[in-house]
Amino acid sequence: MVDKDVTASSLISPRGSAPEIEEGLAFAPKFDAGGLIACVVTDVQTDALLMVAHMNEQALERTLDSGEAWFFSRSRQALWKKGETSGHVLRVAEMRVDCDQDVLWLRVRQAGAGACHTGRRSCFYRAVVRQGPDAPLTLEFRDDERVFDPAKVYGK
Amino acid sequence: MVDKDVTASSLISPRGSAPEIEEGLAFAPKFDAGGLIACVVTDVQTDALLMVAHMNEQALERTLDSGEAWFFSRSRQALWKKGETSGHVLRVAEMRVDCDQDVLWLRVRQAGAGACHTGRRSCFYRAVVRQGPDAPLTLEFRDDERVFDPAKVYGK
Image (tube, rainbow over all chains, first blue to last red; front, side):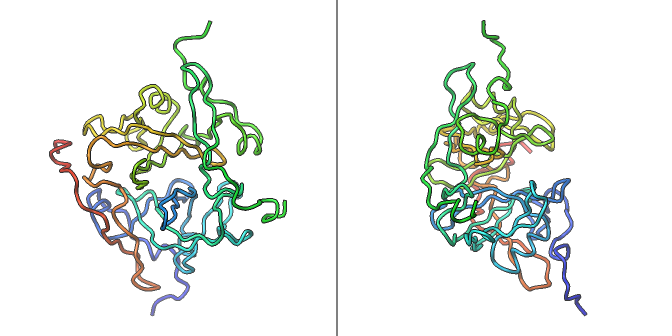
């Protein structure tokens, strides 16, 4: 009889050889020393890069169970459902993995206007610019329109 | 007089407060315990996600100096110019940073057909698929056409 309280571990295959990892059909993700894997999140309709976050096995399992993205917050050291406070959940349309299976890619449909807690559509609203060969690098705002008011949404 | 042998450190500002990091114009990236920062790489013309790699300060500096992407290989623990062997270099059209400045985004023009060492255009050529609630996750090939022959390119 199958244990009903299935853990994420049972969803994941052991790491095999490089050819197995790169060309095989077993999902054998490489978690880092902290048990995390990086997840790139893009909008499935526009292909826009929205954010990058991390999952542990439990976040992965909850994402698979719910169809909505869960992550693990490194700063808070806690499981975190994206949109739990804001309502801006991310419905996962497709999950992919890279060649060496150490990065996930979530293609999502967003509920709500923006993925970034600062109120922008994407977390990547500044470009890195070099003013001169010896000058410190500076940032330039790009695509930085606020699509929601974080003070209202998060009640800060 | 400015030291000509400028190090990447002089290009980078110290980490400030959260509002400074999120809304400021100083580039103050957060490198992890190993001195690395994750870099998402997309095609500037198609917005396709090509790969994810890591930079240390030296790779960042060489990227800025050359306009072509350099990374730091975690498996080989060595600085690495993308395309050094294959010729498939990545010309950086724009570099962005995310809200908390711990991920970089490189928008690139590719020289050569593919970014992945397996011969594909992108490293993300497999989807993660759930066959049943208790079954191990499996992978499905998608967008996995080989655009170059890795045996020929890398001489394996």
